[in-house]
Structure formats: structure tokens, C-alpha cells
Length: 248
Image 1 (cartoon, rainbow, N blue to C red):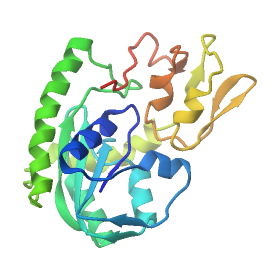
Image 2: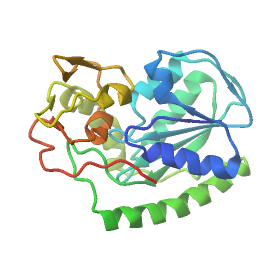
Image 3: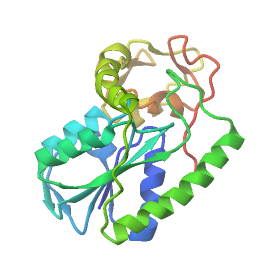
């Protein structure tokens, strides 16, 4: 079984590519979160989480959902983390999560995908995106062999920087950066409601024909990236920046 969380489609794409080879069932954690669904999940041969990397760990909302949900069946658990560069020392925290849930930890691996966190970075150019996908497809094929053979991912050699990024930096990231107050829609907004639909946390509502953001945001960038008229901005940080969604 593959469970994925995806803001702009990278992790969804990786999950689908893995499933093409393994024939695993795919479940969207986005839908689970949107519907406040923590009902039991029946796992068959394996449990694979495909998620983005938020400050060198899995997203907290995914971690919290896993903790609240009961998983029945196979306990062998892998983490595939899409990222813009690296996953740091995420393994330490994924292993801790597995210990708390009674899972058998089988390892973590990062897959570099196009950057989508435009609240802080720039999305790559089209030719760069194609090259990133070309390399990612090769890596996806390689890691899929690990699942098929029921093997563990190799244990990474984490540097002091990796430990700092997944530790103190991650702890600071959420209170300092993950806020919704700077999101707004400008005059290009056509009141289509797309942002409301794609928000996995039901954090957006329409008031006076414009979206309004509440305080339950995870910075997945779905709202700003899927807006059909590029009407949504995050303060001044995203003005004139290219939006990215996975269209593969």
C-alpha cells in the first residue's frame, strides 16, 4: 500500500510511478486530511509513505495523521521523500515514528523533484524541470526494486549539518515561517474556488468573492500554485515568480 501527501503533485507523481511497478493500492492522505478521516487502514504486503520534505523532515500534518490512524496488516514501512535537494537527518525522526506506531522501519530515501516552495525559493525553468524528472524516473525505478525484494534502504551517513537542519532548524521553521496571514488574492481572482478545493486542511473560505485564509496552514503551496489566474500571492515573496505544478 502506498499513502501519499502532495501539495503540487510531485509526491503524487512518485507514488503513481511506484504503483505502476508494484501494483500497490494508492491512498491520498490529502483526502484523508480534508475529510478528517482517521479510520483504520488495512495494509497488504507493505506500507510506503510518499511525502514531501518540509524543513528536512516529513510534514507535521502527515506525522500527526499517522499517529492518529490505526494501521492493520503488514508493518514493514518505507519512507520516500520528495525534496528540492536533500532530506537531511529525516531518518532519525521517521524511525522514531515507526517505533511509536509499532512499524518495522525499512528506511528512508529522498527523490529530488522540482522546487515548489515559492514562499522562499524559485521554481526551476522548464528545461531544468525535464532534466530533474529524467533523473527522478531512474531513481524511482531503482528504489522500487527495494520494495519488490522486501529489502531495507541503505542507512545514510548523516553529517552534523544534516542533524542541525532536521533538528533545530526544523523546530524553528514552523513557528517562524509556516503562517497563512501573508496569503492574499489580487484583482485577477475570478472566484473559481480552486484554492478552497485543493487545500488539504480546509483552511480557505470565500468571503465577499475572495478567498480568505485561516490559521491552519501547512505551506503546501497548493492554493498559490494551482490558481488558474496566478491571482494568489504570499506577501511580496512570490510576486512575479513562476508557479509550479507537476503536469506529468
